[in-house]
Each structure stands twice: as C-alpha cells, then as structure tokens.
Image (cartoon, rainbow, N blue to C red):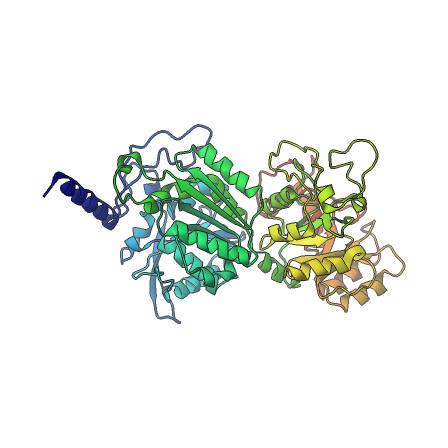
Length: 601
C-alpha cells in the first residue's frame, strides 16, 4: 500500500476515534484574564475528555460536588428519571429563584448520573460561585438513559417526564415560573427545541447550542426569546440552524445573525453580544469560527461540533442575557389574577437613567431591573405611525436646533433622520425613535407595555396590537372616561379628589379592568379606604409614585430614605402595581437585597 494511502487511513482512523470517544486535546490551565472579576474564561478552563471526569485542576470539581444526585418517578410516563440538582447557597423560601435546565448530548447517554456534569460547562457553569454571585439560581441536569432527541426530529417521552420533574420541583422549592430557562448542546439542544414546540409557555428563554430540527415544525419558537450559538464548520447544526431561523422569520420572528472567531478575547465576545442585543431581535444567532484547538486543526474531521461547546458557555454576556428574560404571557396571567399579591413594578418610560426615555434601550434596562410593566408615551406622525415619544416636539430629546419641530408634521422616515441626544455613557441607546410595533416586537414575552393617555389614539393602537397578536401584553392606560377598549386589556385612572370619583370607579369596575390606578393628593382622602376595598374585590390597584401628589405622599425612594419606611406603607395599602421612575431601589428591596443602589444609578 502506498504511503499516501496509509496516511489517509491513519487520518481517517484518528477522526473516527476522536468522534467516537469524544476526546478534545487538553490545554494547561492559565491565570484568568484581567478585568473579568474572577469569572470562568476559556483561557483557564482546559479542554478535556468528555467521557472522563473533569480534571482535578479545574475549579469546577468543587462545583460538581455541590449538586445533589436524586431520582424522580414520573407517574404519567412510568419513567424513572435520575437527575442532578443544584440548590442556591443560603436558599431562602421567601424569595423566588430562576431555574436553568441543562440537557446533555447523546455521547453521555447512560446510567451514570453525574455524566452530564462532566460533559463540558453546560451544567456546571451556572452553579459556579462566580455566576451564583450574580444570578442565584437552581440548576437542573437530568441524566437520560436513552436518546432524548434524534436527527429525525423525534423526541423521547423522557422529555415529558422532565417537564413533570420541573413542576414537581416548583411544588417543593420557591422557583419563579417567569424565569425558567432551557439550554443544551447537540442532542440537548434538539431536546430544548422539542420542549419549546410542545410546551410553548414553559420557558422564559432558551440557549440553543449546536443542534438542528425539522424547520417546518418550529413555528411556536417565532415569538420566543432565543439565543443560538453554532460553529460555522458544523456540517449539520450550521445549515440546520440556518434553515430554522429562515423559517421562523416567515412566521414573524426578528433575527439578528452575526459572526465571530472563537479565538477572540472574552471582552471581544461580550462586546459582539452587546452589539447584537442593541438590534433588539427576539432571536439572536451567533456563528463561531476557529473553534477547533490548534493541536487538532490539521486533522481531517476535527469536530467543530463538540469543540464549539466550550466557547458557547463561556460567553458571559449571553449568560447575563438569559437571566434578563422573563415570560410576558405569564406576567399577563399574573396581572389579571386579583388574588395574586406579587408586587409588579412599572418603570415609567423604561429605566431611562443613563439612556433615553421611551427608547428600546430604556425598555431593555427595565427588563434587566425585573420590572413587569413599562408605561410608554405615544405620538402620531404625519403618516399615521405611532411612535414612542413623550413630548409633541423633538427638541428636548433629539438633536434639533432652532424652532420647535413637531412629530405630527413629520413622516416616520423624516422623523428618523433625527438622532437622540446622547444621555449618559450607554453606547447602545437606539439611534432612531421606535414605533409601537417595534416596542411590541421587542417586549414580546419579556415585559408588559402600558400605554399612557391611550384614549387619544385608541383606534390606531388597537389596529396595531391586534395585527401583531399582542393582546396579552399591551394595556390601555390613563383612561378617565368610558370608551370602547376594543377588546384590549385596560387600566383606567380614577381621581379620588374629583366629585364623581366613586360613581366613575364603580362604572369602571363593571367593565372588568386588569387594574385601576387610584390618584389622590393626600392620604387623608376620605374615599381612599372605600375605593381600595371595592377595587381589590375586582382587580389590582395601581399607584403612581413617580410624582408629587399622584399618590399622596407616597414617592420614589430619595437619597437618605430608609427603604422600609418608604415601601412598606405603600404595599400595606393593598396596591400591587407601582409606577416609578426609580425602579432599581424598589426591585432590590423586594428581593431582600441589603445593598440598595441609590435612585437613578
């Protein structure tokens, strides 16, 4: 046999051996990169054999030891499902925690319960001390005895058992139903897709790594919050994800796709993620090149597929993105549940500190602060487009010189020639004013939108909302007189200082609002106790604490205020929706965080 033939056989054998044993060449651990706060980086977490335990030199050995190994018997499927569970340190049942579900790929399918913990970083990264300091959460990593999803787009009943297990954990632990996330690599990625198709209201967001599925059945994913990462050299997952995202765009999804080398620094990877997020798509698709270690770069068949996983889970900005997502539909159900006592924070015009009010970035920041609602202002352009703007003129928030320039005198195209004035140091502020359609597309499944003073444009608002199927996430606000609400959620405003306050309140309550905003100049208002009692029997009570006299002396927290003195009396009234300009202190107070940030910072 000739030398070239022998070489070809050797290379082919090595490739087959590499894939069948799932080996990635080890690299020596190095010191974490500066400026990362001690977080896990690809520079010091080595590649390792996926079919062996993680080497002792890796810090995650201690993290693995913190997982409990348990088993769940699902009565419906009859499946006995072993699983690993990480419970947050200092778990407090009075608080609510996110849960991250990680599902492994086919190469560790079997009975060894901890195998899923040693197959890369997909499970352990979320339980690391670094990540838990920022995002305390439960981590669930089932161990599947048989294949859970295959290349024929077929899923195992074990996935139904997994959902049953999640429900069981919710019954035993304080897990936030609005912040349950799924992620997985290869077969685990495909399992996540299958779960999203069958249980479209279960997850707040999904992180899909190196998988594929039959595109034409993925329609339910079009309105979901999804991050996709895949290697450009992955011969199945890359074309597979291309097909899925192209199909989802035909179903109304907004997709941002970008490319970067896996050899980029951690800072470069994080910056790329933030650039993508600034485009406000509900599906983000990051394609990685150069994922194979140099030691294997010359070997034919080197697995881009598996080598991409380490980079995928090491990108901190994507992990942060995942935890910022919450279920908008669940928020809608919660909003309409008058007996639910959870406080819903409404960030007036978004969290605009350091950015621009009524911008997509301010809405994004409100989501990051755990706000449930964003009250927004609307203006109508010359060509009948609803845009997010408080003032009727552009001069205060945009670069406009000289005389006032009014929104009503400009078409949308003309309006978008103007840019926002720079506010603070945030480099991701939107460059152009968003339309109501833009805001709905961005807020979908993340946060509710409350349209202030909605009666002026109610027909146009209803047209936009119904066309986008956003009836569960948009609320008509600021209504002071009876109007046809066009089948939309609504929150009327009743001024208790007016002569006809109680008759208006009773008329509104007969219309089944999701909440009523009560406005009063003084806590001594004689109608307040009765108004609270009658409203709470029907729906939630909202109070605007962003301005003096809107809700008596109840106000946003000021510099030297004691949080309990400010927030406890408000909550004691029975009100559960608070419209605020300072959502961060309130949010931290509700979480029991002693390190309250000062308002506006």
